[in-house]
Image (tube, rainbow, N blue to C red; front, side, top):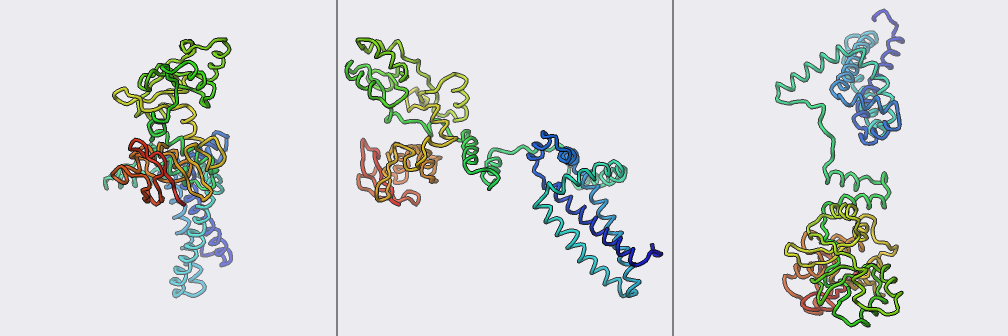
Length: 416
């Protein structure tokens, strides 16, 4: 080595610094690869992705190979720098060479390549995996010895290495991945994915139409009243009951009502012929479970009951779908019939609206872990039954009670 000219030694030193940069940057790039995108590229038959995935299955071997190559190159570069320093400055140049080489390696072989690799991992990782695959086979004995020694050292320290550790994400971790994806996922798709993940966290009671807001057919009414109600209904499904809603007998589909009026004489007894069998579900059923149940039972409409069998409300397949894709409207102020925007930018809100629907419609963050409706939230917040005209600040939202009915908030006004 000492017989080589200074120009050749300097050229070799430059090449070694570049190789050191490659090893350092490729290590960062391979460890920064998105595992899920990697699996997607493997399905697309991407050669570099396949090799990278195979290398990452045994990270101790990969790291052993990279460090073996990087340390050998850095030590070799240090030796050449020392020879050059002795030729140029004598023994005094050794300290200069050590300091200068440390600075060069730190900037050009460590910080710069690793920073670039962290920003563009795929560009370097896939190329590096093609290089490392044959190198690993060539230097396998040395890498094997390094791994055996390092693993035994870790075992002595009480650290057990597991290569088969799973990378499955918990529910909240997956939710964070989606919400923090930034521009990688379009905003509307992000909302849908979060909606799907949140189906497991909410129950049917959180989004059901409460019993006070249910409109149905009372069989105790006169024929003319029932006929008029059927003709003027805007609902696709109508519950059928006797005297009160706790005596549910079934429900009517609007499309079946048309057949009923094709007869010359209408009689409420004829409703029994087109009446659908009621489908009851417990109030603590998760939205995800209920979505599956709707699919398996071929149902689109269910009555929600509590542990005593008392009717609490009803839920439809549309209610569940809106939790994922949002309301079937374009104007946020018209996203719910229970929210009316006024000319002075205030909002008149029905007290029976669910907190989840209010949050979704107005993009608010009112708590959903307690009361399910706005009325319940106001009463819990005040710890008393409010009077008409009462004003309060409900979680940073100024509210005025406009109308009370049966000790419940019927209508509230939100000020901007």
